[in-house]
Length: 197
Image (cartoon, rainbow, N blue to C red; front, side, top):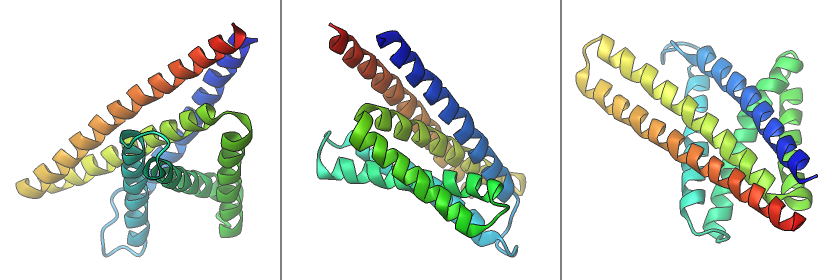
């Protein structure tokens, strides 16, 4: 029972990782190359801000003392924003870019995370949120790298260097989140072991 539950968690985590990485990659490539003169520029800004806020909020949530109001609020903000970009992407794909269906997917994602956290396992919810944080930070690093390369290609070294530093920080956050995810999965396994004993 213990092994099957833990294996099920790993399978669910892998499926969420694949689905969220696919969505983030498609979102990133959909906004790359747009300039302020393009009509869809606001989407590029919105995507960047959503990945940035989801990442920063989760960093604050993990670094703040556990079970404090700041930690819970920050993690909740990260979860909401991550569910938003994930829901809008898959809702838009399935609903033929119908905004009402996309919003319904966002709400369904939020409700599923809330239900999991309240009625099933808080640790499973934390694992899902940290995993989405990894994807948000990865997407943020990719966008920062694209901006850095764009500036460096036109020999604007100062701005290219600044965006390169942002990219490096985002990569460091990805590594930090991966360590947090490993720790959460390890803690979950130890909790399952204690329940069996």
